[in-house]
Length: 526
Image (cartoon, rainbow, N blue to C red):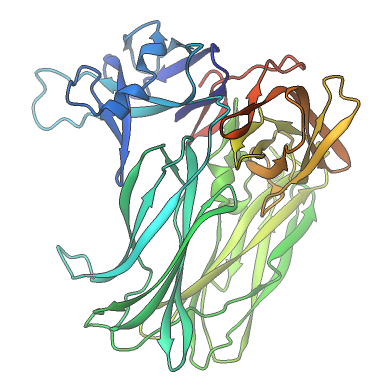
């Protein structure tokens, strides 16, 4: 769970934290503590507010003094639920990013024989306060390959090393996409490509990242091409050739197989109680056989979401889906047909669409990974009516240059079906009648499944605009509908060029904390 919000100076945020005792054995006392927040390669780091040795940057960018909790402890009987009021008052002088951490930890049982396992939950508090000078910058550097020998029963492997830092002034959520190529003759051949899970990166954070590659590599010359991506936008790249000592147990260089599952998007329709069958095909383009395993897998992004009492898992049809054959050997140049059978339950189907993935993993005869591919399945329940709907979150403005501003708009799918969403932004007079500028807000993937969201962005040139108040109108077009959000802003000219300050939106919308995590993303009470 994460408490995250974009707010204006002087804002006051209120929400509730819900704590539930899911055990069935004894009454527990739960303690709630506030900490300064830092970060390293392993994740979040808590710093005691009373620690005088804490770095000045951590203390200066802490919002611990802003937070008030109605209680610092609760006593829970088995199955009981208690709520704690959470309030955060942003000073009018605050600008930029501030963070803190809230921990929830049961008191260790006393006088209990044996070993007791005590679990502490950490909730990051991430607050971005509007600032006309806020800017986004991420750097990835120092790529290299390191051999990790076998240890404590763990097999040897090749580790990719990179340095990652956020010298900007805003929180970013990034992922790394890395392609590793081997020098073969006079050219380069891709041997591995990895994409890391998304992670939040605090302003000022800097650390090294180690990534275990899916296959170990022999000695040789390799080229590493790495991209740091945030919201489908590449923020930083690095490319470097390295000499790698190699894994002595690996003698043969293996490359990624160009696997293609056809079709990559499957659309099926049926009524509750019916069974539907479709076929996919996979071709082996290599000159040696592949051992392939395939199965229906959940759409992880949907499975980990919630909106109120609505769980993302309720949109999945993975458990109703059977893939055959589950394992097979695919000879060179041959094609394999794969049967996908979906048995829809007779009752409990309230959504118009359900989703799953079909994932295939291929290996070479010696066991080394050859690659993987997947298809996305849309199952239409003909007895339920689709109701597409999206919501626009408050727009974010980041300084891009002396005369330019980067506009970020987050879109959340709150309807009961997927939707293709296209966004734009226009700058108008405060009455909304005269348009001065317009820009397309782009994203690499405009498809939104239920409960999911994405950020789109575009750069607007403010050169030639007079200082004063303007209305920014962001628009999302989807399924023949339009959703808009209006934000009143002030443009001024400072020593570093044009600056944008957010004023109170005329549509009456207010910033609210957003709680997100493995069990969902939503507003208010969790």
